[in-house]
Amino acid sequence: MTETETQTQTQTETDADADGGTDTDTALDTTIYYDDDADREYIDDKTVAVLGYGSQGHAHAQNLADSGIDVIVGLYEGSSSRDAARADGLRVETPATAADEADIVSVLVPDTVQPDVFEKIQDGLDAGDTLQFAHGFNIHYNQIQPPADVDVTMVAPKAPGHLVRRNYEAGEGTPGLVAVYQNTTGTARKEAVAYAHAIGCTRAGAIETTFREETETDLFGEQAVLCGGATALVKQGYETLVDAGYSPEMAYFECLNELKLIVDLMYEGGLSEMWNSVSDTAEYGGLTRGNQVIDESVREEMESILEGVQDGSFAREWISENQANRPSYTQLKAAEEAHEIEAVGEPLRDLFAWSDSGGANEENEVVSEPEAAADD
Ligand code: NAD
Ligand code: MG
Image (cartoon, rainbow, N blue to C red; front, top):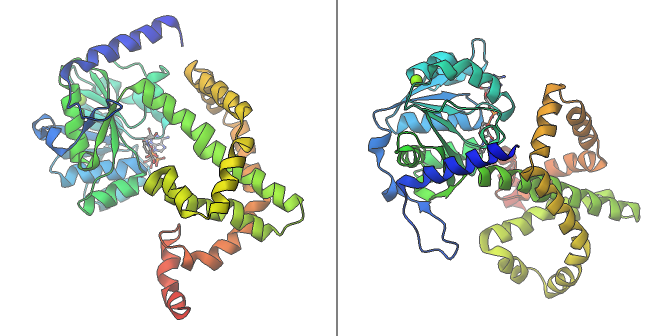
């Protein structure tokens, strides 16, 4: 990213702070919007085009419609999602027509195809319309350059779409993020918070952020800790045990299956709940050996990964990878699928699906309930 582009973004995001929010009393001085902070008059009379009917698209579209908002789903002719959207009672048009008729255009197609879709819809953006995202990548890395006279916002639920939908139907909320990149109307933030209300996010809390912060923390997190870091840790642990002669099944349970139990405890009550729930031996062993595995050199690598996110080099790499039809991606994906832990895990997961309360395979859980009960 060039110096000028960085400055433009900082400038726009500072301007965007104009219409304020509710400061909560948290130590981190974070603004979180709840239902009471939302003013639905900023969305109730508007038409929203939801482009894409995948994970986020189907949830946003149905939640908005159930909240009484006029929704048009934008899908290209021949898209297999068209029937699904119609079956859910929604009106379907091409992305261009939907965007043309709408006041708010919610861009929920995959990040890699958003620049192409934007080319097709940009003529339908009138002055004062809103271009809205659920992830900041294309705006932050300048892959989409929105017209100067539209608002640009983000409402990003922090959960996959099926949970956003399920929680809404259950009367519950899904935490989310709200950001304003460009605020030409002066009401961009109020409209984004109203949208967050209409899809159920303010029931749980919508945290104020910026496109830059959301994009960079999201990419760093998925690379270093969540998707990349966690799988690498699991594979290294598994290989260490198997190479030392232990059974692959034991290594699978110890290094992959049990990770969920530990993560669930951290999710529920932080690190202390996890440490308090495991044995003193596990606690002492973990406290003394953890930093030996994830040591200073790992920290340095993490800093280098963060640098690649911040200076745009990861983004450039991923964009060229897509332009070249994903050669490395395809190869790496195949290698990951061929890892021994995958072949070892599959039959074990089927075997033990019943014992995994809240586990991955709900259908198995239900089917196998009598067996579980018989064991008691
Ligand atoms: P997805 O892959 O589930 O669905 C995208 C939909 O877009 C498809 O179902 C299809 O209807 C349409 N589509 C696919 N290819 C297309 C093409 N070539 N041209 C036009 N339309 C096409 O996408 P998603 O995971 O819902 O992601 C949408 C946005 O939401 C992204 O910006 C993503 O970063 C963001 N997001 C996703 C999640 C999540 O958990 N999935 C969470 C937060 C934010
Ligand atoms: Mg329009």
